[in-house]
Amino acid sequence: MVDQARARRLAKRIVSIVGTAIEYEIKDPRLSFVTITDAKVTGDLREATVYYTVLGENLQSEPDYAGAAAGLDKAKGVLRSKVGAATGIKFTPSLAFVLDTVPDAAREMEELLARARAVDERVAQVAANATHAGDADPYKTESDEED
Image (cartoon, rainbow, N blue to C red):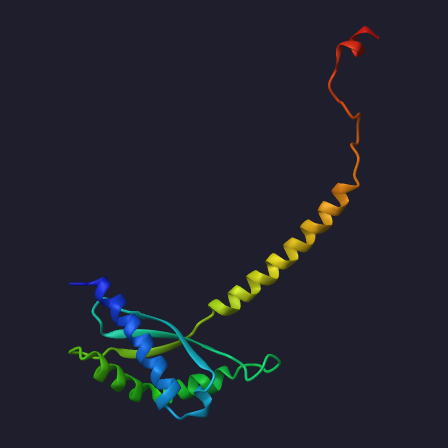
């Protein structure tokens, strides 16, 4: 029987446990800029997919995605043991780490919105100085009919 509420609670707990373990207990320098963003657990609680992001050391440097993936793969067994010890469930779920693409997609959306705002501002400037192509009042009036 699948209990989705229990799976969601376990996923939240896994995010907390893995994030804390990476920050304070795992001493791999490749994981120093890794942030756990989300987790999904299957209905039978046997498998967990953990999503992570990698930040650069500063704004100009490119994040080391390959190093972070290798570090997480190496620490997978230790992290699974910590999840099992902290949750106390009968079967500890296996962990699969997936790079989270949501921050990149959000950054792209922000850039698109900025471009759209710039185009809207240019259109508003052009419209402010624009005049009608035809008459100011294009509708016939009684005085026009008399002529």
